[in-house]
Image (tube, rainbow, N blue to C red; front, side):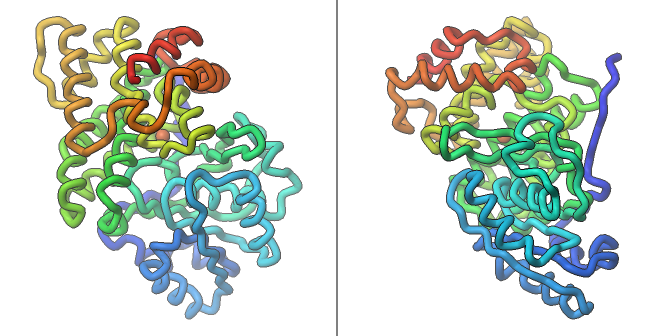
Length: 382
Ligand SMILES: [Fe+2]
């Protein structure tokens, strides 16, 4: 068995209303200056937390996060300029993946001589002197579990991955109640993103038994609950199951990570501002169809976790799994074709060029993807 490094938050708190426990975290008790970065819709839910912390005599600054889409380098620098005068010793991010990514980078780059542009890539960050707590409010990105942060380079429209063990939070609080107000469309898209994390980790060239367990259980939980949560956002049982599934997906991200689905979606997000989960949801079935021959057994295992019974051969079972995935995606009202989101044939070579540059993810794919392969995959989705 290959060796593997599992880097996870030092503390994971999971449960309904766990947000309220943040104020009593030992990290807070030993911090004096606490910076909150909070997505606008979560401000009222989080208010009681910073009030309780203020009552303990701590200094608190709250920054509202309201950037649409993926955060850019410029937007991140604005946040850093806004917050650095405060010299926080602890950063708390409350929001979706973009908010958490920015909170992670704020904790890392506050009072750090490195600039954000210098740490793009794997392992360039020189350390982190600030404590970091992440509270996800969607069930999807898994940012609260991972060593990854993604920013958009506004000059080149390229999504830039920053990967470092110093970006793993000290603690995260996963509170399913915070996801109840998430609209059906966002629930569906972020849920499909989490499903992609699990599926891409399990079918990964570097898949590992220590991560497989998370991946398969994540697939089961998300498949069984995504439609329910989309149809009835207040179904807390389904919301909790999705939060757990997303947590499992996040646990896949550091040690194994994603592959061609995420790589092929980079251009859709960076250049055409298609939501991350939506881009992955559209690409996932066709990339799986392409990858299947490289490892029919693992793709059949995914199909079974999706709820498909054995269809005879691994290939047949895996193909039935892909159909099940499409069925789930349609039931959650996710568009199925690139043309549905405004992508036309002449754009495909450019999208493929962007994907070919995402070598850090493409290297994980069980089958080599050439530019021509990428164009063919996109074409099948027109
Ligand atoms: Fe993702």
